[in-house]
View 1 (tube, helix red, strand yellow):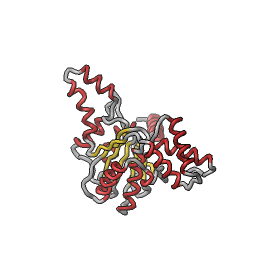
View 2: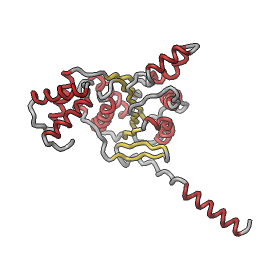
View 3: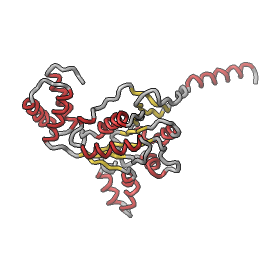
View 4: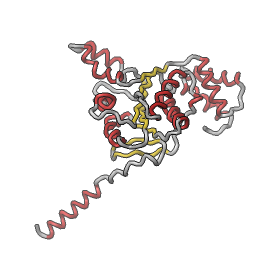
Length: 284
């Protein structure tokens, strides 16, 4: 190889190195209490402040709260625990409960447990995340919010193997919680369509429906009644020290729910934000 060819090859090599993405930083779970997972390049981005609601402010979900808290306390204490799926009505506090339980367990158990959020579109990289966490001393609670799958979506296979069928299994220091508006993680019309067109209807949908069965805990969330809605609004108002009477608060809450066409924890919080702004209170 002559000098000119060698020099050209060197320049090409250097150019390729500059175009290559930087290496992922080493895993540091001690840097924060919560992280967001990014698969490309693979790294955990620390979260300085988690947007959460105090566990005592979550109303109308007492049974769900007790079950999830007990399961997470067991996990923090090194005892057997189950992955959990929280499914049901929108705005009823599914993801809020997970974040609130994480904070409560860290206080009660005096445990430094990391909360890691994985986005729905990155669920196929879940096995890679688990491999990074495997062998770490810190316990990790992974949350996937608003998890669901469409007809041509094959990402569920990665989650399915992780939950139950993988040869390595779930790491002892990892627990997985997911929230979804769908009980079986896929739309009902998709289930009915596959059942009606398949040669063997049960086998056609078994693979996808069985995914939700692999969660040891199922917690359903349903639309709340007016008394529960009032309890939510009043709890938020007290926590923010809003200078408003119960009668006026309830009247505004009813008007707000009518304009939104629903009653839920999310609607209650939005109502309180509106009232707070009218009263000149700073945002929470």
